[in-house]
Image 1 (cartoon, rainbow, N blue to C red):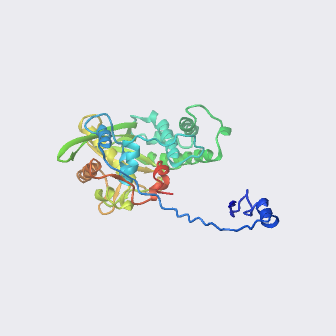
Image 2: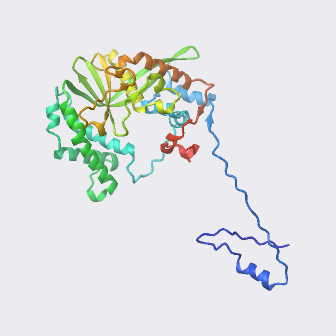
Image 3: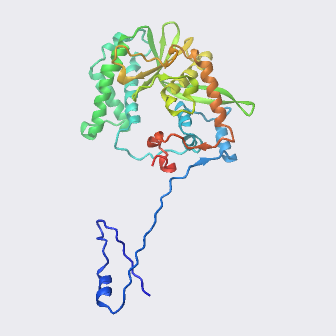
Length: 371
C-alpha cells in the first residue's frame, strides 16, 4: 500500500485541498483510492505547578543572606516574597535577571525612575536649607524644571548622553510632559505649602541587621534600600519620603494583613515604606541618622494637588500613622514570623495563589502562570 497525506487546514499557504497528483491518482489511474480522515485530539493540559524544595544547595545559597555573609534583602525583594515565593527564589536566591534587551516602550518603572531622578536633581541644591518652601515656590514652571526632566531622561534612557526631540518617540514625549506637570502642579505646590522641614538627604542608602529565629536559634538578615528623600521635621522627627507614581494605596488593615495570606490586604507601598522606616529607626539608634523618631510618608504624586492630601499612612481603624514607633512592635513581630517561614526547610518556594501579579512578572516566561 502507498499512503499520501494532506492537511485540510486552510491558511495563507494552503487551500486545504488535496494536491493535483492525488486527484490524478483518484480519477485517472486504475488504482482504487481509499480516503481516511485522521483527526488529532489535541488536549492541551494546563501549565504544571512549579515548586522549588529547599534542598541543601538552595539552603547554601540562602545562607549568603544570613549573619553578615554579604547578601541582603531589599524592601522590593521582600514584597516579592510576600506576593510570590517562587519569584523571590528566581530573583534573590537563584540570581536570575530579567531580559535586559532594549525596550522601546516606557513602562511604569521607567516613568517612576525619570520622576525620581528629576526630583533628585531639583532638590539637591536645597539640601540643608531650613524652611525651603519659598525656594521651592520660585522653581515652579521655570526652565530649570524642563532641564532637570531632560537630564533625568538622558540618564535613564540615553546613558547620560544628550538627545534631541527628534530622538524620542511620542510615548517618551508624553512621559516628559506628564513628569513636568506632576512636578510643577503637584509636588512643588505641596512642598511649598509645608512648614517646619529641612531636606537632609536624597537617594539615601538605608540598611540594618534584623534578628529572627530559625529552629530556635537567632540569626540576622540585612535589609538594604535607597530612600528617595529624608526630611528632618520640627521636634526631631525624621520623615522618610517615598515617591509613588502608581495607583494610590495608603490605607492598611494592620501589620498582620500587610504580610498575611489575603492578596488584597497586602499593600506593597505601605510595607516598603515601613521597612525603610525600620532601617532608619535602627540607624537613628546607632547615631547614623539624626532625629528621635521616624515618620513614614508616601508621596502619591497624582494626588498631591488635592488641598486635603496627606502623605501619612492610614490604618483603617486607628487613623493616620504619625510615627513608625506606633507600629514597630507589631510590624517587626510579623516580619520575624515571615522570615522564619522563608528559611524553614520544610516550606518550599511555591507559585503565588493569586495570578494577578503574574501579568507583570519578569519570570512569567519560566512558570507561565499568567499565560
